[in-house]
Image (cartoon, rainbow, N blue to C red):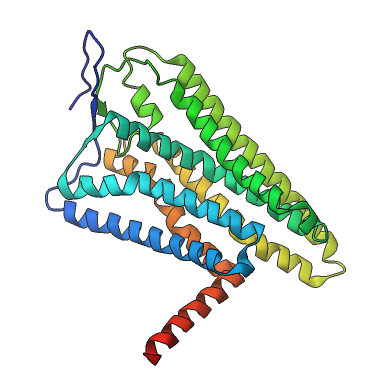
Length: 321
């Protein structure tokens, strides 16, 4: 369906139609199962990590509290897209109400910004832990931890709230969203006229957040690398401990950036099929939320040991019954 062009703007209630994937006949059920499995793995992986951290008081430390915030962010992104995508595969339903489209777009953009701000806060925590180990408890207090986590979410929510504030009173003359999910760009692209303020703010906000977080993480790891190399001359365990505690965070950040870069690169190849471009555009909410708990579960010795401990206790209780 092509976008509806009319002399007068559309009136509420507006119902959009997501273009979605072109699903060949007979493949809808298979794609539904694959999307469902991905969502289940995401829920189970992140849920297990969060439960282990919440249950065990020895993990009530800044790094793991921030990890819980990252888990919540991953669940937000996956839940915003995958359930509706599964409905699309199973029933072919493409219609989405105006309010639901805004909610999905708001959640997706919040996820995109919050992931970066939370990873920035985690980089600051790792910098203090490695470079100022003796002062770490005094610096990263409960109040400072709450402030860092709250700041990460407030920055994300405020940036996206301002972005969507530009949607107010913007008349729309089309109702077909040519994507798998609704986004600011897709919705504002249906406006009856040009929207330069929204476009300028969106690009400026994206560039500022990405560049700012990159600089924070780069500064933190340059200092961490310098401290680990300097201190390892007197303590051979310092360098290995520093890399061990920071490896998972850096891998998660690089993975997210690669997933985001794939989206940009995919638009540079117009000859590629629409389905491939659309699939590449949702990798950043498929791969990171699925892989992150695995990365932290495997790299973090504490989470891994506690997880095995809880599983063994459950197994022992089961066999005793």
